[in-house]
Image 1 (cartoon, rainbow, N blue to C red):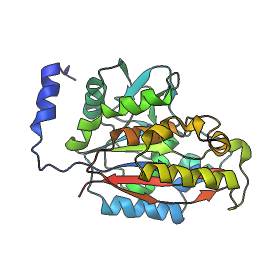
Image 2: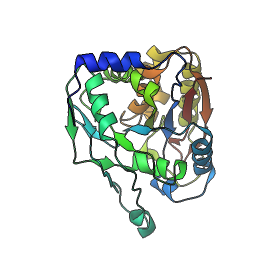
Image 3: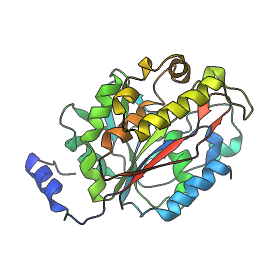
Image 4: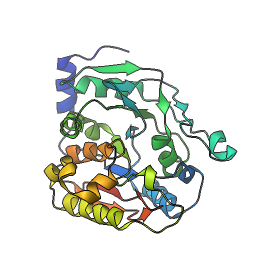
Length: 276
C-alpha cells in the first residue's frame, strides 16, 4: 500500500465534483447481539435501510466494542468475525459475516486525521457492534467494511472534533456508522419490554437535543441530570453517537428509526442523516 502525502489528500478533497453524492451516515442502537440472527422489529428496519440507501463502496464502523489507548484503524483485507460476548446460543457463535476489508479506505481514514497519530493494525476485525447490524442490513456481505477504534482515554469533546476530520470519506462512497446505544446500563437490565422512567426520559431528551442541533449539551451529557447519569454509567456506547453528530452538516436531513427503549435500560433509538 502506497503512502498518501498531503498533496494526495488535497487532490482527494478537491477531486469530487460539486454534484457528487454525499453518502448517508447513521448512528445505530445495536442492543442485544441476538439481533444478528433474529427477525424482529429492529432487524426489519436495518434490512429496509440496506435495501433503500445507495450502495456504499465501503462501510466505516465506529463501534462501542473496540476501545483502545490511542486511535487505531483496521487495514486487514479479510477481517475476522469477532464473537465478543458470552452466554448466548451456539447459533450466534456459528454466525459469520465474511465481508472483505477496505484497506485503502482504512489507510485513507488514518491519513485524513491530522490531529493525532492513527495506528494501522491487522489484529482486529468486525466486532458484534458492526456485524450484528450489517448482517441484516447487507446480508450478501459483499460491501467492504473496516473499523476505527475509540480512544477510551479521551473526553467526549475530543471524539466529536475528531469525527470532523473524516468528512471527506462521505464524498467517496463511504457510509459511516456509529454503533452503540444512547441509553446503555447493563447493571439495570431486566428481561421485559418495560423501560425505566429515567431511561425513557433521557432517550426523549437526547432526541430533543439532536433535533435542536444542540451538540454542546449532548457532548456535556453529565450536566443533564440524574436520568443522564443512570443512562450513561460508562460512555463507551454513547461516544459513537458523537462521531455522527460531529460529521453532521447543514445539508443533512435527520430522521430517527427503531425509537424504543427495551430491557429496562437499553435504548434502540437510531439516527439517520442523508442528503437529498
